[in-house]
Amino acid sequence: MAGRLEKSRALWDRANRVLVGGVNSPVRAFKAVGGHPFFAASGKGARLRDVDGNEYIDYVLSWGPLILGHAHPRVVEAVTLALEKGASFGVPTEAEIALAEKIIKLVPCVEKVRLVNSGTEATMSAIRLARGATGRDLIVKVEGCYHGHVDDLLVAAGSGPTTFGSPTSPGIPKSHIEQTLTVPYNDAKAVEAAFAAHGGKIACMILEPVPGNMGLVTPAPGYLEELRRLTTKHGALLIFDEVMSGFRVGMGGAQQRFGVTPDLVTLGKVIGGGLPVGAYGGSVALMDLVSPVGKIYQAGTLSGNPLATAAGLATLEELEIPDTRDRVERWMTELGMGLHQIAKEAGIPVCLGQAGAMAGLFFRDGDVMNYQDALKSDTKRYAKFFNGMLERGVYFAPSQFEAYFGSTEHGEAELDQTLEAARDVFRTL
Ligand code: KE4
Image (tube, rainbow, N blue to C red; front, side):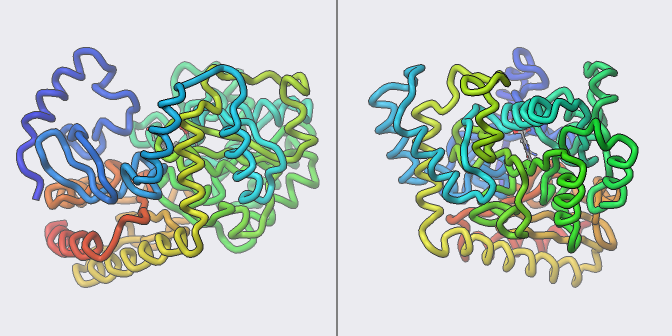
Protein backbone atom coordinates (compact mmCIF):
# COMPACT_ATOMS: atom_id res chain seq x y z
CA MET A 1 0.00 0.00 0.00
CA ALA A 2 1.35 3.46 -0.84
CA GLY A 3 2.25 5.27 2.38
CA ARG A 4 2.49 9.05 3.03
CA LEU A 5 3.38 11.42 0.18
CA GLU A 6 4.71 14.29 2.30
CA LYS A 7 8.08 14.59 0.54
CA SER A 8 6.37 14.46 -2.87
CA ARG A 9 3.91 17.11 -1.68
CA ALA A 10 6.75 19.42 -0.62
CA LEU A 11 8.53 18.86 -3.94
CA TRP A 12 5.25 19.47 -5.78
CA ASP A 13 4.83 22.87 -4.09
CA ARG A 14 8.46 23.75 -4.90
CA ALA A 15 8.15 22.51 -8.49
CA ASN A 16 5.05 24.64 -9.10
CA ARG A 17 7.01 27.76 -8.21
CA VAL A 18 9.54 27.23 -11.01
CA LEU A 19 8.18 24.73 -13.54
CA VAL A 20 4.99 25.31 -15.54
CA GLY A 21 2.36 23.19 -13.81
CA GLY A 22 5.19 21.63 -11.79
CA VAL A 23 6.16 19.42 -14.72
CA ASN A 24 8.14 19.29 -17.93
CA SER A 25 5.43 17.41 -19.76
CA PRO A 26 1.72 17.99 -19.01
CA VAL A 27 0.61 14.34 -18.77
CA ARG A 28 2.84 13.93 -15.68
CA ALA A 29 0.74 16.39 -13.66
CA PHE A 30 -2.03 13.89 -12.75
CA LYS A 31 -4.56 16.64 -13.60
CA ALA A 32 -7.09 14.20 -15.03
CA VAL A 33 -7.05 11.95 -11.97
CA GLY A 34 -6.80 14.52 -9.17
CA GLY A 35 -4.22 15.00 -6.44
CA HIS A 36 -0.58 15.48 -7.37
CA PRO A 37 2.06 13.21 -8.80
CA PHE A 38 4.52 11.28 -6.68
CA PHE A 39 8.14 12.21 -7.30
CA ALA A 40 10.31 9.31 -8.45
CA ALA A 41 13.47 8.54 -6.50
CA SER A 42 14.58 5.41 -8.35
CA GLY A 43 13.42 2.50 -10.47
CA LYS A 44 14.50 -1.12 -10.75
CA GLY A 45 12.97 -3.67 -13.08
CA ALA A 46 9.17 -3.47 -13.07
CA ARG A 47 9.06 -1.19 -10.04
CA LEU A 48 9.39 2.51 -9.21
CA ARG A 49 10.14 3.94 -5.77
CA ASP A 50 9.04 7.49 -4.82
CA VAL A 51 10.82 10.00 -2.59
CA ASP A 52 8.69 8.89 0.39
CA GLY A 53 9.80 5.28 -0.02
CA ASN A 54 6.52 4.03 -1.54
CA GLU A 55 6.94 1.36 -4.22
CA TYR A 56 4.79 0.92 -7.33
CA ILE A 57 4.53 -1.66 -10.07
CA ASP A 58 5.04 0.55 -13.14
CA TYR A 59 2.71 0.21 -16.17
CA VAL A 60 3.69 3.62 -17.58
CA LEU A 61 7.41 2.78 -17.97
CA SER A 62 8.29 6.37 -18.91
CA TRP A 63 5.33 6.29 -21.40
CA GLY A 64 6.63 3.28 -23.28
CA PRO A 65 10.44 3.35 -23.68
CA LEU A 66 11.35 0.99 -20.81
CA ILE A 67 10.47 -2.38 -22.36
CA LEU A 68 13.41 -3.82 -20.38
CA GLY A 69 12.17 -2.15 -17.18
CA HIS A 70 14.06 0.39 -15.07
CA ALA A 71 17.89 0.40 -14.85
CA HIS A 72 18.40 -2.80 -16.83
CA PRO A 73 22.04 -3.88 -16.18
CA ARG A 74 22.80 -4.09 -19.90
CA VAL A 75 21.59 -0.54 -20.49
CA VAL A 76 23.31 0.86 -17.39
CA GLU A 77 26.61 -0.72 -18.43
CA ALA A 78 26.34 0.51 -22.04
CA VAL A 79 25.57 4.11 -21.06
CA THR A 80 28.25 4.16 -18.33
CA LEU A 81 30.92 2.91 -20.73
CA ALA A 82 29.83 5.47 -23.34
CA LEU A 83 29.82 8.33 -20.83
CA GLU A 84 33.35 7.51 -19.67
CA LYS A 85 34.48 8.23 -23.24
CA GLY A 86 32.55 11.51 -23.49
CA ALA A 87 28.92 12.61 -23.74
CA SER A 88 28.86 14.14 -27.21
CA PHE A 89 31.28 14.96 -30.00
CA GLY A 90 29.33 16.73 -32.74
CA VAL A 91 31.07 14.51 -35.27
CA PRO A 92 29.89 11.06 -36.39
CA THR A 93 30.39 8.03 -34.14
CA GLU A 94 30.17 4.30 -34.86
CA ALA A 95 27.30 3.82 -32.37
CA GLU A 96 24.86 5.85 -34.47
CA ILE A 97 25.70 3.70 -37.51
CA ALA A 98 25.08 0.57 -35.45
CA LEU A 99 21.70 1.82 -34.18
CA ALA A 100 20.67 2.77 -37.73
CA GLU A 101 21.76 -0.65 -39.04
CA LYS A 102 19.69 -2.32 -36.31
CA ILE A 103 16.59 -0.29 -37.20
CA ILE A 104 17.06 -1.07 -40.92
CA LYS A 105 17.40 -4.78 -40.11
CA LEU A 106 14.23 -4.85 -38.01
CA VAL A 107 11.76 -2.37 -39.57
CA PRO A 108 10.45 -3.39 -43.03
CA CYS A 109 10.04 0.04 -44.69
CA VAL A 110 13.43 1.41 -43.60
CA GLU A 111 16.42 1.47 -45.96
CA LYS A 112 17.94 4.66 -44.54
CA VAL A 113 17.50 6.48 -41.22
CA ARG A 114 17.90 9.90 -39.65
CA LEU A 115 18.23 9.90 -35.87
CA VAL A 116 16.73 12.84 -33.95
CA ASN A 117 16.08 13.58 -30.26
CA SER A 118 12.36 12.92 -29.80
CA GLY A 119 9.24 11.50 -31.39
CA THR A 120 8.07 15.05 -32.03
CA GLU A 121 11.19 15.81 -34.07
CA ALA A 122 10.70 12.57 -35.97
CA THR A 123 7.10 13.31 -36.99
CA MET A 124 7.82 16.99 -37.71
CA SER A 125 10.67 15.94 -40.01
CA ALA A 126 8.69 13.17 -41.68
CA ILE A 127 5.86 15.49 -42.71
CA ARG A 128 8.36 18.07 -43.96
CA LEU A 129 9.99 15.32 -46.04
CA ALA A 130 6.59 14.23 -47.38
CA ARG A 131 5.74 17.82 -48.37
CA GLY A 132 9.16 18.32 -49.96
CA ALA A 133 9.02 15.01 -51.81
CA THR A 134 5.53 15.57 -53.24
CA GLY A 135 5.48 19.35 -53.57
CA ARG A 136 2.09 19.25 -51.84
CA ASP A 137 0.95 20.92 -48.60
CA LEU A 138 -2.10 19.11 -47.17
CA ILE A 139 -1.82 16.41 -44.50
CA VAL A 140 -4.41 13.79 -43.56
CA LYS A 141 -4.37 13.04 -39.81
CA VAL A 142 -6.50 10.71 -37.72
CA GLU A 143 -8.48 12.37 -34.93
CA GLY A 144 -7.29 11.12 -31.54
CA CYS A 145 -3.82 10.19 -32.74
CA TYR A 146 -0.98 12.07 -31.06
CA HIS A 147 2.27 12.71 -32.88
CA GLY A 148 4.07 15.01 -30.46
CA HIS A 149 3.69 18.78 -30.22
CA VAL A 150 4.19 19.61 -33.90
CA ASP A 151 2.12 22.65 -34.98
CA ASP A 152 0.49 20.92 -37.95
CA LEU A 153 -0.29 17.79 -35.92
CA LEU A 154 -1.70 19.40 -32.76
CA VAL A 155 -5.07 19.21 -34.48
CA ALA A 156 -7.64 16.83 -32.97
CA ALA A 157 -4.71 15.32 -31.06
CA GLY A 158 -5.00 12.57 -28.49
CA SER A 159 -2.96 12.08 -25.28
CA GLY A 160 -2.48 15.28 -23.28
CA PRO A 161 -4.35 17.64 -25.64
CA THR A 162 -7.46 15.47 -25.25
CA THR A 163 -6.89 14.82 -21.54
CA PHE A 164 -6.74 18.56 -20.88
CA GLY A 165 -9.59 19.44 -23.25
CA SER A 166 -7.70 21.18 -26.07
CA PRO A 167 -7.34 18.59 -28.85
CA THR A 168 -6.51 21.48 -31.18
CA SER A 169 -4.03 23.69 -29.38
CA PRO A 170 -4.24 27.47 -29.21
CA GLY A 171 -1.20 29.10 -30.83
CA ILE A 172 -1.38 27.15 -34.09
CA PRO A 173 -1.83 29.53 -37.07
CA LYS A 174 -5.20 29.10 -38.81
CA SER A 175 -3.32 28.57 -42.07
CA HIS A 176 -1.66 25.49 -40.54
CA ILE A 177 -4.89 24.04 -39.14
CA GLU A 178 -6.54 24.43 -42.54
CA GLN A 179 -3.82 22.29 -44.09
CA THR A 180 -4.50 19.38 -41.75
CA LEU A 181 -7.51 17.28 -42.75
CA THR A 182 -8.75 15.03 -39.93
CA VAL A 183 -10.55 11.72 -40.38
CA PRO A 184 -11.85 9.14 -37.89
CA TYR A 185 -9.71 6.04 -37.22
CA ASN A 186 -10.95 2.82 -38.82
CA ASP A 187 -12.90 4.74 -41.48
CA ALA A 188 -11.32 4.23 -44.90
CA LYS A 189 -14.31 5.83 -46.63
CA ALA A 190 -13.53 9.13 -44.87
CA VAL A 191 -9.99 8.93 -46.23
CA GLU A 192 -11.34 8.18 -49.71
CA ALA A 193 -13.58 11.26 -49.44
CA ALA A 194 -10.64 13.42 -48.36
CA PHE A 195 -8.68 12.31 -51.41
CA ALA A 196 -11.71 12.81 -53.66
CA ALA A 197 -11.97 16.38 -52.43
CA HIS A 198 -8.27 17.26 -52.23
CA GLY A 199 -6.41 14.35 -53.83
CA GLY A 200 -3.80 16.19 -55.82
CA LYS A 201 -2.91 18.48 -52.90
CA ILE A 202 -2.38 15.85 -50.17
CA ALA A 203 1.29 15.22 -49.34
CA CYS A 204 0.75 12.41 -46.86
CA MET A 205 -1.44 10.62 -44.40
CA ILE A 206 0.13 10.14 -40.96
CA LEU A 207 -1.34 7.90 -38.28
CA GLU A 208 -0.48 5.65 -35.41
CA PRO A 209 -1.24 2.27 -37.06
CA VAL A 210 -2.24 1.10 -33.58
CA PRO A 211 -3.25 4.25 -31.70
CA GLY A 212 -2.12 4.36 -28.06
CA ASN A 213 -3.00 8.00 -27.44
CA MET A 214 -6.77 7.81 -27.31
CA GLY A 215 -6.40 4.80 -25.08
CA LEU A 216 -5.49 1.72 -27.13
CA VAL A 217 -7.46 1.03 -30.31
CA THR A 218 -6.71 -1.68 -32.90
CA PRO A 219 -7.16 -1.53 -36.69
CA ALA A 220 -10.28 -3.10 -38.17
CA PRO A 221 -9.48 -5.88 -40.68
CA GLY A 222 -8.41 -4.34 -44.00
CA TYR A 223 -8.23 -0.76 -42.72
CA LEU A 224 -4.46 -0.32 -42.98
CA GLU A 225 -4.41 -2.12 -46.34
CA GLU A 226 -7.02 0.33 -47.65
CA LEU A 227 -4.93 3.31 -46.51
CA ARG A 228 -1.96 1.86 -48.38
CA ARG A 229 -4.09 1.50 -51.54
CA LEU A 230 -5.58 5.00 -51.33
CA THR A 231 -2.31 6.84 -50.64
CA THR A 232 -0.55 4.99 -53.46
CA LYS A 233 -3.44 5.69 -55.85
CA HIS A 234 -3.30 9.44 -55.13
CA GLY A 235 0.50 9.80 -55.02
CA ALA A 236 0.55 10.67 -51.32
CA LEU A 237 2.98 9.18 -48.81
CA LEU A 238 1.76 6.88 -46.04
CA ILE A 239 3.52 7.61 -42.73
CA PHE A 240 3.20 5.19 -39.81
CA ASP A 241 3.98 6.91 -36.55
CA GLU A 242 5.40 3.94 -34.61
CA VAL A 243 7.01 5.98 -31.84
CA MET A 244 4.89 3.98 -29.40
CA SER A 245 3.99 0.81 -31.35
CA GLY A 246 7.50 0.20 -32.69
CA PHE A 247 9.12 -2.90 -31.17
CA ARG A 248 6.06 -3.34 -28.91
CA VAL A 249 3.38 -4.39 -31.42
CA GLY A 250 6.09 -6.52 -33.03
CA MET A 251 9.84 -6.44 -33.46
CA GLY A 252 9.21 -4.77 -36.84
CA GLY A 253 6.34 -2.72 -35.47
CA ALA A 254 2.73 -2.71 -36.61
CA GLN A 255 3.86 -2.62 -40.23
CA GLN A 256 5.39 -6.08 -39.83
CA ARG A 257 2.58 -7.48 -37.69
CA PHE A 258 -0.16 -6.34 -40.06
CA GLY A 259 1.89 -6.73 -43.26
CA VAL A 260 1.31 -3.16 -44.49
CA THR A 261 4.45 -1.24 -45.47
CA PRO A 262 4.31 2.56 -45.21
CA ASP A 263 6.54 4.95 -47.16
CA LEU A 264 7.98 6.46 -43.98
CA VAL A 265 8.02 5.44 -40.33
CA THR A 266 8.70 7.51 -37.24
CA LEU A 267 10.23 5.87 -34.17
CA GLY A 268 11.19 6.82 -30.62
CA LYS A 269 10.82 5.60 -27.03
CA VAL A 270 12.13 1.99 -27.13
CA ILE A 271 14.98 2.89 -29.54
CA GLY A 272 16.34 5.22 -26.87
CA GLY A 273 15.93 2.80 -23.97
CA GLY A 274 14.93 5.73 -21.74
CA LEU A 275 17.30 8.32 -23.24
CA PRO A 276 16.22 10.94 -25.81
CA VAL A 277 16.11 9.33 -29.26
CA GLY A 278 13.71 9.64 -32.18
CA ALA A 279 14.15 8.51 -35.76
CA TYR A 280 12.49 8.63 -39.13
CA GLY A 281 13.24 6.30 -42.00
CA GLY A 282 12.15 5.03 -45.37
CA SER A 283 13.51 4.24 -48.83
CA VAL A 284 16.92 5.52 -49.93
CA ALA A 285 15.20 7.56 -52.66
CA LEU A 286 13.01 9.35 -50.12
CA MET A 287 15.54 9.76 -47.32
CA ASP A 288 18.23 11.08 -49.69
CA LEU A 289 15.99 14.11 -50.27
CA VAL A 290 17.04 15.23 -46.77
CA SER A 291 20.07 17.47 -46.24
CA PRO A 292 23.00 17.21 -46.76
CA VAL A 293 22.28 14.85 -49.71
CA GLY A 294 19.02 16.55 -50.69
CA LYS A 295 17.67 20.01 -49.97
CA ILE A 296 15.04 19.29 -47.31
CA TYR A 297 16.64 20.63 -44.19
CA GLN A 298 16.61 18.96 -40.77
CA ALA A 299 19.31 19.02 -38.10
CA GLY A 300 20.00 18.53 -34.38
CA THR A 301 22.91 19.28 -32.06
CA LEU A 302 22.58 16.08 -30.07
CA SER A 303 20.98 13.86 -32.70
CA GLY A 304 22.44 10.34 -32.49
CA ASN A 305 24.49 11.20 -29.42
CA PRO A 306 26.68 8.46 -27.90
CA LEU A 307 24.71 8.01 -24.65
CA ALA A 308 21.28 7.71 -26.26
CA THR A 309 22.51 5.45 -29.05
CA ALA A 310 24.28 3.24 -26.48
CA ALA A 311 21.04 2.88 -24.48
CA GLY A 312 18.98 2.26 -27.61
CA LEU A 313 21.35 -0.29 -29.07
CA ALA A 314 21.58 -2.21 -25.76
CA THR A 315 17.79 -2.26 -25.56
CA LEU A 316 17.26 -3.53 -29.10
CA GLU A 317 20.04 -6.14 -28.80
CA GLU A 318 18.45 -7.47 -25.59
CA LEU A 319 15.03 -7.43 -27.24
CA GLU A 320 16.38 -9.41 -30.18
CA ILE A 321 17.10 -12.40 -27.92
CA PRO A 322 14.53 -14.94 -29.16
CA ASP A 323 11.16 -14.87 -27.41
CA THR A 324 12.01 -11.76 -25.32
CA ARG A 325 9.39 -9.40 -26.77
CA ASP A 326 6.96 -12.27 -27.26
CA ARG A 327 7.27 -13.12 -23.56
CA VAL A 328 6.21 -9.56 -22.65
CA GLU A 329 3.22 -9.93 -25.00
CA ARG A 330 2.18 -13.21 -23.41
CA TRP A 331 2.44 -11.66 -19.95
CA MET A 332 0.29 -8.71 -21.05
CA THR A 333 -2.31 -11.15 -22.37
CA GLU A 334 -2.46 -12.89 -19.00
CA LEU A 335 -2.88 -9.54 -17.25
CA GLY A 336 -5.64 -8.52 -19.67
CA MET A 337 -7.52 -11.78 -19.16
CA GLY A 338 -7.26 -11.35 -15.39
CA LEU A 339 -8.53 -7.78 -15.49
CA HIS A 340 -11.36 -8.78 -17.82
CA GLN A 341 -12.48 -11.55 -15.45
CA ILE A 342 -12.35 -9.21 -12.44
CA ALA A 343 -14.37 -6.52 -14.22
CA LYS A 344 -16.94 -9.12 -15.29
CA GLU A 345 -17.31 -10.48 -11.74
CA ALA A 346 -17.70 -6.91 -10.47
CA GLY A 347 -20.27 -6.13 -13.16
CA ILE A 348 -18.22 -3.17 -14.41
CA PRO A 349 -18.28 -2.66 -18.21
CA VAL A 350 -14.78 -2.35 -19.62
CA CYS A 351 -13.26 -2.51 -23.10
CA LEU A 352 -9.82 -4.06 -22.90
CA GLY A 353 -7.51 -3.85 -25.93
CA GLN A 354 -4.06 -5.25 -26.55
CA ALA A 355 -1.56 -5.04 -29.38
CA GLY A 356 1.63 -6.95 -28.61
CA ALA A 357 3.35 -5.46 -25.57
CA MET A 358 0.98 -2.50 -25.19
CA ALA A 359 -2.60 -2.49 -24.00
CA GLY A 360 -5.51 -0.28 -22.97
CA LEU A 361 -8.46 -0.28 -20.60
CA PHE A 362 -11.58 1.79 -21.34
CA PHE A 363 -14.39 2.13 -18.82
CA ARG A 364 -17.07 1.82 -21.44
CA ASP A 365 -19.63 -0.75 -22.50
CA GLY A 366 -18.99 -1.96 -26.04
CA ASP A 367 -16.10 -1.73 -28.45
CA VAL A 368 -13.90 1.32 -28.96
CA MET A 369 -13.15 1.65 -32.67
CA ASN A 370 -12.21 5.33 -32.82
CA TYR A 371 -11.78 8.62 -30.98
CA GLN A 372 -15.50 9.40 -30.65
CA ASP A 373 -16.05 5.98 -29.02
CA ALA A 374 -13.10 6.63 -26.69
CA LEU A 375 -14.49 10.02 -25.65
CA LYS A 376 -17.64 8.28 -24.40
CA SER A 377 -15.62 6.41 -21.76
CA ASP A 378 -16.28 7.04 -18.09
CA THR A 379 -13.24 9.17 -17.20
CA LYS A 380 -14.45 9.63 -13.61
CA ARG A 381 -14.52 5.86 -13.11
CA TYR A 382 -11.08 5.64 -14.70
CA ALA A 383 -9.80 8.23 -12.19
CA LYS A 384 -11.22 6.15 -9.30
CA PHE A 385 -9.57 3.02 -10.76
CA PHE A 386 -6.26 4.86 -11.16
CA ASN A 387 -6.21 6.20 -7.59
CA GLY A 388 -7.39 2.94 -6.06
CA MET A 389 -4.64 1.04 -7.82
CA LEU A 390 -2.04 3.67 -6.93
CA GLU A 391 -2.94 3.39 -3.25
CA ARG A 392 -2.26 -0.33 -3.61
CA GLY A 393 1.16 0.22 -5.19
CA VAL A 394 0.17 -0.18 -8.85
CA TYR A 395 0.81 2.74 -11.22
CA PHE A 396 -1.28 2.91 -14.40
CA ALA A 397 -1.31 5.93 -16.75
CA PRO A 398 -2.92 9.00 -15.08
CA SER A 399 -5.39 9.41 -17.96
CA GLN A 400 -8.05 7.35 -19.70
CA PHE A 401 -6.55 8.46 -23.03
CA GLU A 402 -3.28 6.60 -22.70
CA ALA A 403 -2.08 3.02 -23.07
CA TYR A 404 -0.35 0.85 -20.50
CA PHE A 405 2.85 -1.11 -20.99
CA GLY A 406 4.67 -4.21 -19.77
CA SER A 407 8.36 -5.03 -19.62
CA THR A 408 10.61 -8.08 -19.56
CA GLU A 409 10.81 -7.58 -15.79
CA HIS A 410 7.08 -7.89 -15.06
CA GLY A 411 6.64 -11.43 -13.67
CA GLU A 412 4.40 -13.61 -11.50
CA ALA A 413 4.73 -11.40 -8.43
CA GLU A 414 3.66 -8.31 -10.37
CA LEU A 415 0.76 -10.19 -11.97
CA ASP A 416 -0.51 -11.46 -8.60
CA GLN A 417 -0.17 -8.09 -6.85
CA THR A 418 -1.83 -6.22 -9.74
CA LEU A 419 -4.82 -8.60 -9.95
CA GLU A 420 -5.23 -8.65 -6.17
CA ALA A 421 -5.30 -4.84 -6.14
CA ALA A 422 -7.74 -4.81 -9.06
CA ARG A 423 -10.11 -7.21 -7.24
CA ASP A 424 -10.22 -4.75 -4.34
CA VAL A 425 -10.56 -1.66 -6.51
CA PHE A 426 -13.23 -2.93 -8.91
CA ARG A 427 -15.49 -3.52 -5.88
CA THR A 428 -15.31 0.24 -5.16
CA LEU A 429 -16.00 1.54 -8.71
P1 KE4 B 1 8.01 12.73 -27.84
O1 KE4 B 1 8.24 14.04 -28.57
O2 KE4 B 1 7.20 12.92 -26.58
O3 KE4 B 1 9.28 11.93 -27.64
O4 KE4 B 1 7.13 11.80 -28.82
C1 KE4 B 1 5.90 12.29 -29.31
C2 KE4 B 1 5.04 11.12 -29.73
C3 KE4 B 1 4.92 10.85 -31.09
N1 KE4 B 1 4.17 9.82 -31.54
C4 KE4 B 1 3.53 9.01 -30.67
C5 KE4 B 1 2.70 7.88 -31.20
C6 KE4 B 1 3.63 9.23 -29.27
O5 KE4 B 1 2.95 8.42 -28.41
C7 KE4 B 1 4.39 10.30 -28.79
C8 KE4 B 1 4.51 10.63 -27.32
N2 KE4 B 1 3.67 9.88 -26.45
C9 KE4 B 1 3.33 10.52 -25.19
C10 KE4 B 1 2.45 9.57 -24.39
N3 KE4 B 1 1.15 9.45 -24.92
C11 KE4 B 1 4.53 10.95 -24.44
C12 KE4 B 1 4.28 11.36 -23.00
C13 KE4 B 1 4.35 12.84 -22.82
O6 KE4 B 1 3.78 13.58 -23.66
O7 KE4 B 1 4.96 13.24 -21.82
